[in-house]
Every structure is written in C-alpha cells, then in structure tokens.
Image 1 (spheres, helix red, strand yellow):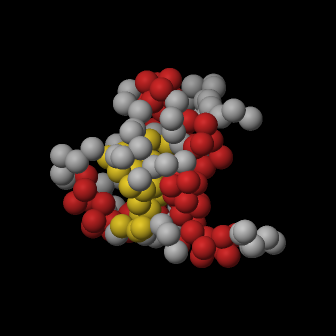
Image 2 (tube, helix red, strand yellow):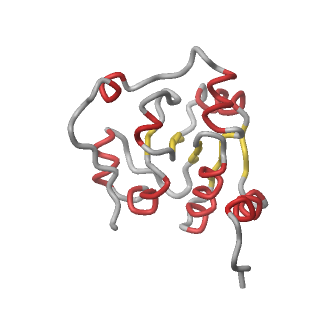
Length: 151
C-alpha cells in the first residue's frame, strides 16, 4: 500500500525512483536520429506559447490521461497516436510535473517514458537558439483552445 499524506515533493521523490531522465544533449541526440519518438510538453497551454522545444506537442498534465491514447487528439496535431512501445520524452518548466506525468504514463502501460532533466528551463539555457514560440496565440490567437479531457 502506498503511503498517504504525501507532499508534492515527496511524490516527486518517489516518482524519481522509477522515472528515467535525459539531459538536453541526450534529447538532442534522440531528435537527430530516425527513432520514432514524441516530445510532450506537459505545461499549461499559456506557458507553452511563450517557448517550447520545436516539434513538441502540448498536452497539459491535467489532461494527459484523456488525450494520450485518443486518436482524434493526435489527428488534430497532425501526428500519429504513439504506440505504447514508442519513446515519449516529457518536459515541464523544471521537471516536477513531467516526472509525475511520466509515472502516470508508465502505469498506463507506456514502456519507454523519459523526462527532460531540469525541464524547459534547462533546455532553454542549453539550446537558446533551438526554441520556438507560438506568436499567433501570444497575439491573442483563436478565441477557443480545447485541452480536451474527460472531466
């Protein structure tokens, strides 16, 4: 039985025992291969618009369980839905949300889930010229944005 009354930091510490991390350099190496992978930003959409790893998909942590295996979500992104054996690389601002999300995806049967060590901040510092922004959304963008989810 899992302990109760855990703090967020305690939950992250527990997840860190089973979640594998990659450095920005290791992620860049993966991105330069022909391996099938998805980079998923689990921050809120308004955080994502200000800066993200090129090619990443934004699925906020609060809706990942509902969207990760939903064909229509991936079609909207113009991508194929990932198979459970494919590599998923997660990141958030500093690494805590993505670590908790990785543990969740592993419990859903995803076999190769990695977390970017230090999150977006580490990537941005390591590769400042390899970052994108969603200028349309920053300028007001479409009136509606659906993060999906079943709640």
